[in-house]
Length: 358
Ligand SMILES: *[C@@H]1O[C@H](CO)[C@@H](O)[C@H](O)[C@H]1NC(C)=O
Ligand SMILES: *[C@@H]1O[C@H](CO)[C@@H](O)[C@H](O)[C@H]1NC(C)=O
Ligand SMILES: *[C@@H]1O[C@H](CO)[C@@H](O)[C@H](O)[C@H]1NC(C)=O
Ligand SMILES: *[C@@H]1O[C@H](CO)[C@@H](O)[C@H](O)[C@H]1NC(C)=O
Image (cartoon, rainbow, N blue to C red; front, side, top):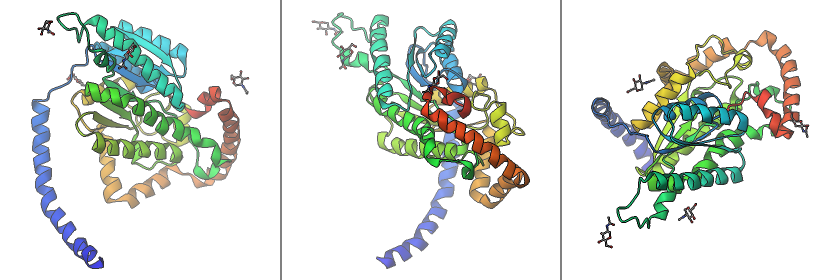
């Protein structure tokens, strides 16, 4: 057995060195050809389910889809904000918008909002006659129900805190519950329908998922988990369902308000407007791309991370961690963290402390 591994240790890298460069050339040519004569999906009349649609990227994605004439099922915890977004989406040209109150970290909520979207648009499609058969017999109920075309997993929260400063580490499961499990649950219930419609899943992860950023440890872990999960799912579903993994950098949204930027010391980094980011996401999804990083220059950080991780980590530590002030900040954070703990008990008010986005 050992001998086989010794053999592979030498042969496998050699074979890879020989085969990868020509493949990269082929891939580049393929990319250019695709770019020139790319077929972009027309989303008019299609049904799009967006979680965390009450603000930020989710909200603006709703507007972009609406401008292209897609029907929308919008999900978020804050119903009042959601109604406003739904109204605006309708004005922008969406033929049919429903808003559903739901908390993605609750598995039953996910089951219910997928079913509600299905029921509503199942009928909607029949009314609009997309599958209408000439003899008016309509024997295709099954097809009518399979009408979610895009699922956008966007809902998320981002607590900012040095890991050492979390007073009680057991109180932060909600980060994983919303950012990771929320997407997994929604996807689980939508996948049978997406398979029928040959639909797409759009995952809003984050650059922090592969780019270590101080004070965002739990957030980064949840976003990294999303990337791994959907990359694995992609290998399972094959070409039946398209999966676009989006890793935005700093985008203007409810998450990245002044308080967050100050706390995370990210004020020096320019933010991209939410509108532009949403537009890029829709463009990329309709072209069927597997990954999107926006703003695009952030992608270069991947190279730094891959080839010179010491430099990247060193810079991060040097610029983003200020030791002399650390003790004082620890005090502040402890106080904040304790109030955060109280708030975790009361789910409705997690909002203010957690820089939330849904
Ligand atoms: C309509 O019904 C007729 C007879 O019942 C059948 O021959 C024909 O194929 C049907 N057309 C369609 C489009 O289903
Ligand atoms: C489709 O939806 C209708 C109405 O919501 C329901 O009665 C029917 O059982 C559903 N069919 C399937 C196959 O799920
Ligand atoms: C999206 O696509 C449209 C039309 O192809 C183009 O005009 C627009 O600049 C693109 N937007 C972004 C942000 O890539
Ligand atoms: C939860 O928060 C709401 C609104 O902030 C408040 O009215 C309510 O009393 C809180 N409940 C508990 C159990 O703290």
